[in-house]
Image (tube, rainbow over all chains, first blue to last red; front, top):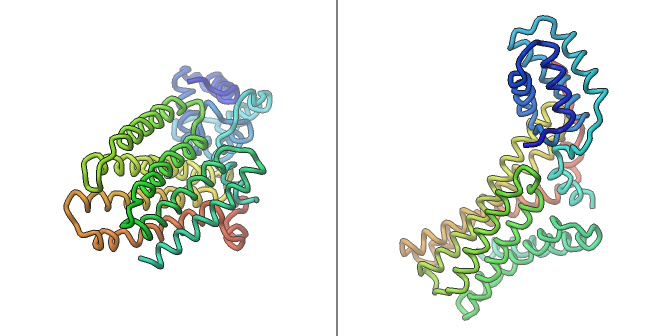
Length: 103
Length: 224
């Protein structure tokens, strides 16, 4: 499965900031995305921002990361430097319903 | 039964006009399929209730078959993304082949082919129920982190419930035919389900203004 540029950037920043393996870092980001109802291949920057703000702290603390605030700052910085690319976001079906509602 | 039938037919007629009008304006597939789907469900219900004994049952069945196919197209038009396109196409192809085969083979009510046709129709709606329930759960998670409104996940859940109700209604008919239940008993058992389907679909597809004011707002989220 192809992953969005946003997913890759955050996973690589997590790998660099923790010393975890590539699989561990990507797996952690995947788990956080799943908890937020999002998918690695379509997640956008704004969606990932919400995940970092509201879900990633718990995931990092559960894995015994020391300075969570500093790591979250590094992840946010990596995210800010990444464009959405071809990511479509996860709300396409919601958009279809909204067109019907807004008529 | 008559009241339920009238309510269901009137609702599907209004929905069909509404969605086809929207499709004309937006030129998008989901609303077009929905409009035709509502039309077929209404036609099927009308003919089933009013003319099932008048020798035009085949028209009623055609409408039910078409409704199932259109529902599958609607579900696929919403959910077919890069990850699921192959699965969606496989399900669509299987449903289409089965519907076409059972329709061409004919068969009177209660026969194996007739029951296979109804079962295929109901599977189309079961798939829709599963797809919308899954999407509703995801939308609920997105709502929890501020990326969706409460109405979005409730709408998905309601549309899933509507499809489940249609599936159960078809299922009762097949079960009744297989076990030799009287037609009146089958109709009696089916009564609640068109009502559930109608109300749920109405909330999902055309939520009233007061509900939108109350539930379609950006969620308040506390940062962990």
